[in-house]
Length: 153
Image (cartoon, rainbow, N blue to C red; front, side, top):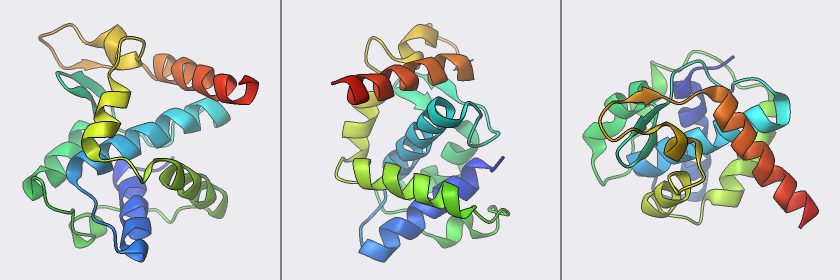
């Protein structure tokens, strides 16, 4: 299992290859979405860090507190360099590339709105006050439904 930093760093490398900026919000949401699809396809977490339900959607606190200093600017690749320890396996890199390609056209705000609508794991967890952990089983079930809708639709 990877760390959230490993996954985020890989997304930054994809964006850097294309010369595309990656704001903290977009990076957080892409990392979360990848985790959801990974749970749906493989039945296991993509990374070990906890995901919490915050006011504006699901957040990976460890990643958030590392990259929030960039504000609305693009996250620097070097910000995660020393925190990322694992080499991404080829099959997982291919998986992450497909998630990136599917969602790269959206802004951080657009991705945020996708991750905290009424039927999401965030909506089932957020209680308005506390930073509750979102259960991986909720995330897995939600993304399995999304995958099934696409394959049946």
